[in-house]
Length: 288
Image (tube, rainbow, N blue to C red; front, side, top):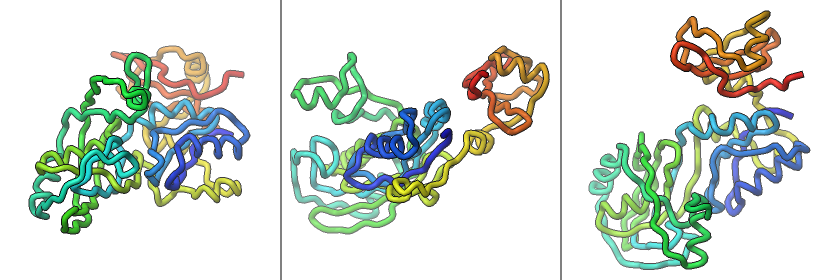
């Protein structure tokens, strides 16, 4: 089985749990996802099966959309309500001030990676440093917040903010929540998170865990996905042979990226522009 499955991950499941379920149902170990969701988070997990695992890198690079809830007045070690509370205060923030701060984050900035994450430093995952109480300088990543809009705001001693955001690859919403609180001169932590979109994929089209277990899910083909993302060309004869062999070819149309398929619409390879030529980026066909 080769293709992409959209999964609506449930709360308290790890992304690995979802991969294991798909692996069992599809009878293959060649399963991967395009971006981890923490156990407390719900929503869209894009899972690649079989030859489609070659697309993980491509699909991971897409922007993502989320609906998040943050609780003001609380700070935890994990930057969400699942962690150990480090500090708790009463705080009052005004709705209009929150709106101004949200607008100010629609930019590109250096975001600190959370200590409780799988990012590796010197071959060791950050959460391993945290669990062994080792001090480590946390890395920063350049991220882009493309949209950030308030959905709801409840006042009180510990106000609650619900917002929608569209972000670039590698953005941690937990860190964004803390950064929003800091800019309002207070503290805050993430209390809920749902991923609603990954690139061209939407949570509305996702399968439930029960549907997957019952083998009642939709499988998107490699052709369906890539042809909706890139220019697609049907090739035959000598050109098809060259592409099957991964040879560089002329870029007559000056394309940045192109999907080559055979007459049966079976994907052969994804080619990328290299100076005046096209070079094989991902070989998708199994050579016979």
